Image (cartoon, rainbow, N blue to C red; front, side, top):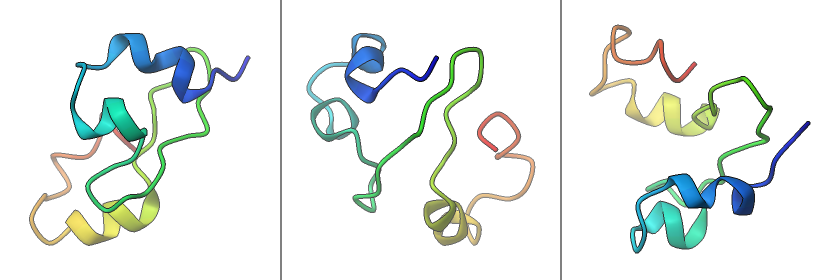
Length: 62
C-alpha cells in the first residue's frame, strides 16, 4: 500500500511549510511513501544538508 501525502498529513504539525505544501525547505516533495517504511529525505536535499549534518544524523531518514 502506498499512501499519499494527504493520507499522512494528519500526523504532521498543522500550519507549517511541510503541512501546507508537502515539501521540504528546498521545495522538494517527499515520497513516494510505503506502509511500514520511514519516509525518505529527497536525495538532493540530503546532499545539500550533508555539509551541516554528519552521517550520524541521517540513519532514521535514509
